[in-house]
Image 1 (cartoon, rainbow, N blue to C red):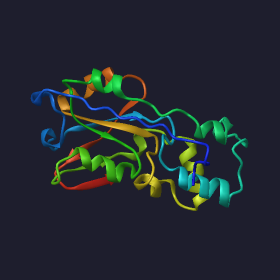
Image 2 (cartoon, one colour; image 1 turned 45 degrees about the vertical axis):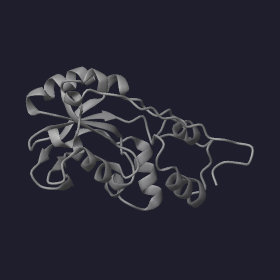
Image 3 (tube, rainbow, N blue to C red; image 1 turned 180 degrees about the horizontal axis):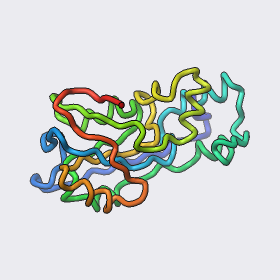
Image 4 (cartoon, rainbow, N blue to C red; image 1 turned 60 degrees about the vertical axis):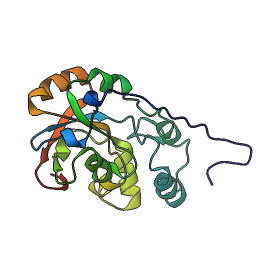
Length: 193
């Protein structure tokens, strides 16, 4: 287990109300819509079992080990707070038609949740930098970084789907760290190119 007998975990959730005509969802997505990604701040809260196994147990690293590629200790990297996207998503009201939170399961499992079943997406892998922590995990696990796109967020924490005419405005509103990474296609599944 992760917690000792005298430790505890605090979690919370919220429920909101929205007018029906302002709902975001897959039914509003069309082929050709653009995917606007917001950078993650690291692993967020997913992938720690894998990290513990490949970096701590298998590779023998310690949390206080300084990792040059990270510019800090492994422990500091793992404790990086999860980026919160509420302000950006709220600012994108009126532009966004659907939203995908990229958590465990990576792009392959989370992006389809924001799309109708009959549509998919083409994601251009070279449109954003993958943070070093993901490459370190891949190397320690003996896999290519691309193999982790179905497991980890790989540097993308949130994807907003917008109509093509709104893409430039959405990028401007989303601000630094937002990037156009691909588009919706008329074929199910997520393809990384």
